[in-house]
Structures are given as structure tokens and as C-alpha cells.
Length: 392
Ligand code: ADP
Image 1 (tube, rainbow, N blue to C red):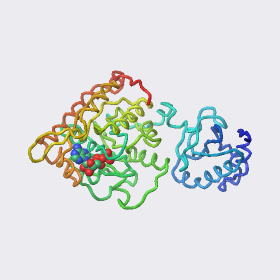
Image 2: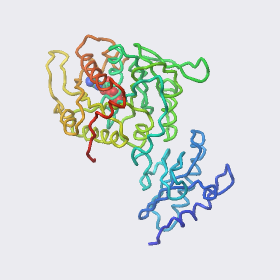
Image 3: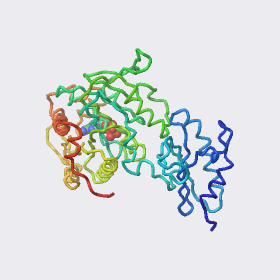
Image 4: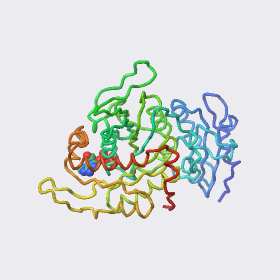
């Protein structure tokens, strides 16, 4: 089989011209981080760090992939758009990935997963004391429900709280917090957050039509989140609860790197499979050096609305065991409860609608644990967290 070399790749790319600048991507020194493994080739194309540019350069990225794909012996190609050249730059440097094509089977994906190198890109959020992420290894485990009620429980403890719905693929905070309408911008620069139940809330759900199909590419996701962090008039907050998109892919990892997180709460259901995903989420935060505040077991047991009896339908207790095994705290368990589902889904989350009820109590306990963990200065808190040491 023909050997593929960096020179071959560059030679193929030499023919691809950036129409905006009329020169080859190689001449323009846009190509970096070429990785070749067997028939798989990966490389990055350096672009200006903005959304419009990422969109405009997509055909160019595709053309580059096709040109390299045509080389003998090449079986897959992944070109990523990167907005930051790594130290050393040029061919052979390791780019930080900001966008990636649909075929992501190739090597060279050393971007966000490469470790805490990206920590430098976090925005300053001077008015916000603690940014807390709520994450899950997969969708449907109740991450958003937990975010909403945790935020309300923190507010019930007298804290000033904001909610950033970073789950831009399926924003649910507007519905769960019963907020409709569009945020205003009195000065034309910053958006005012929406408010209900004493929380300040920002969600992509306020900005785009709920039913409009949205295709988000990496850099758009990043800039949407970044803007919701920095271009929103949050004011002074004790806590900003960030409802992350489910999963542990590159988008989530980059987000965990770019958002200045004081810590993360991981939501899991008791089933083994979900816990496997929870372990991936733990590992993701470990990689980017974000302290895991603990695990919440949601839908932990079934609370019968008629007789009040408790049934452990999903072999309850797995999250506690996982937490113990990996040296993170178990923050509490929330029952599978019809009231939680019905009220959360119609904008009356239990902590707001029945603050004295047993469901609210579960969330208040979790909020107390989060407050206790994050009281004191953030650096001190960080150092007291155990380092999780496992690979998965
Ligand atoms: P995720 O954010 O993980 O995708 P959601 O928070 O949107 O999950 O929850 C998925 C569904 O499960 C929603 O209909 C929600 O009301 C319901 N749900 C979440 N937690 C509970 C619970 N403890 N008991 C009953 N239903 C719940």
C-alpha cells in the first residue's frame, strides 16, 4: 500500500484555494497538526475565531478533506476548523479543535480531550461567585429537572441564583421554569436574563423557536454558551447553575474546559448502564480538572402516590456505591415521583410549588451539601477535593 506522508498531504492541499483570499491553504499557512495513522489522516485548518467565519469556511474544510481522501491509501480524513494555533504552530503542532466534520472517525482528535491545556480560555465572570455544572453521562436521566430544582433550592436558602441552560440541543429550562417570551436588551449590548421564582434564567429556548430545527456545529455551540455567559446581565450571583448538554463528547468536554466551573454535580439513574455513563462524566471532569461535587441518584426508588410505599425498582443504591468507589461524595437520592414529573414539566417545579413537600426536601438537602462544599474560597475548596484516579 502506498505510504502516506505529510508531504503527500500538503501536496494535495496545495491545490485547495481559500476563495476569500485567493491562495492555497498551504501558502496561507492554515494547515496544522497533520496526523497520519494507517490510512487515517487528521489535520486542522486555522480560521478566525468567530461563528461567521466557521460557517463560511465549511466548504473549504470539506474540499480539503476530499483532496486528501483522493490520495492513494487514504481510508478516512478528518479536517477540523481551529481558531487557535497551538504553541509552535504550523504543520505538526497540536491544534485545539473548535469544529469538526460529521465523519469523526479519524485520528488527530487531540483537541479538547488532550487535557487541561484549554483552561486558559475561560472568561472572567466577576459578579458570579460559583458556577456549578449539572451534568449527566446520557440524556433522560433528569439532569434538567435536577438543575431547576437545585437552583430553586439554593435560592430557597437565600442565595442569589442564575440558571444557564447550556443544553442548547434540547433547552428545557423555559418549560420547567414556566417562562415564555424573549429577553430584552435595553442597551443593545447585553441581554437581560428572564426571571421567575426569583431565579435569573438564560436559555437558547428564549432566543430561537422551540420547533425550529437547529444544526449546531462545534464553534457555534461554543460561542452560544460563551455569549450566554458573558453577554447576559447576570448581576451579582452566588451561584450560576449550568444545565450542560447530556453526554461526554467533545462538545461537553470543551464546555467543561471553557466555562469557569467551581464544580460539577453528576446526575445518574440507578441502572448500571446509566452509571457507566456517569463514570464517563466523572472522568471527563477529572480530565479538565474540574472538582466533582458529587453524584445525585435520580429516580432512585419509586414513591407510590397512593400508599406512600417505597419500591426499589431500579436496584437502588448504585450511585452511592459508584461515588464511594471513585472517592466522590454522594449528594443524595431523589425518588421516581409522579409529582416531580407532572409539576416539573408544566413549569411548577416541586421546590417552588410545594416547598414543604418531601420532594423539595430531597433537593434542599442536595443544595445544602453544595453550599457546604463551596463555602470558603474556591481555590481552597478545590484543593480539598480528592483526585479521582481511574481510567475508563
Ligand atoms: P435530562 O435533562 O437528563 O434529559 P429531564 O430532566 O428532561 O432529563 O427529565 C426527563 C423526564 O423525566 C422529564 O419528563 C422529567 O419530568 C422526568 N423526571 C425527571 N426526574 C424525575 C423524577 N425524579 N421523578 C419522575 N420524573 C422525573
